[in-house]
Length: 124
Ligand SMILES: Cc1cc2nc3c(=O)[nH]c(=O)nc-3n(C[C@H](O)[C@H](O)[C@H](O)COP(=O)(O)O)c2cc1C
Image (cartoon, protein in one colour):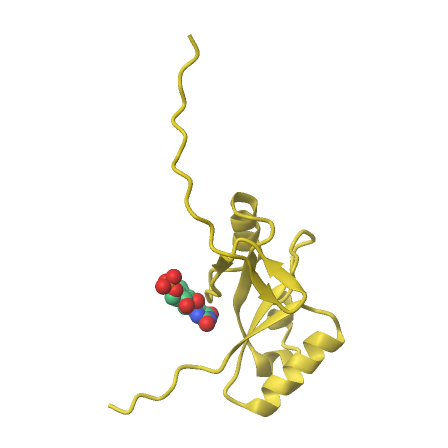
């Protein structure tokens, strides 16, 4: 007799998330993690997760993009199966943030940009 395999209980899926022209379904996002969500980690997560979820890259400093720092330009490369390509830009300077977004959008280096303006100053 064939062994019986227990079926895991079905979890309620969160509703899809619409970000511009992209539909993140289910609405599960791999949070950006500096030093962790590199192309290899994202590829593994996508392999075991949903192909239509969002997998955000490591935090990228806007100024380093504007200056085309070679290590940073390497960090913003995506794998061939990564779509949409989600990039997190960090800056507290709106001029650098704008210039980096223009460079990335103008050269088609990513499909989605997550902006990180840092944590607000504590008043304590
Ligand atoms: C190791 C590590 C690195 C992180 N790096 C970033 C980062 O680069 N940018 C960012 O916005 N948040 C960063 N975070 C915060 C996460 O994106 C996330 O917001 C946080 O872990 C809260 O999510 P959780 O409650 O699921 O842990 C980092 C968190 C961890 C643990």
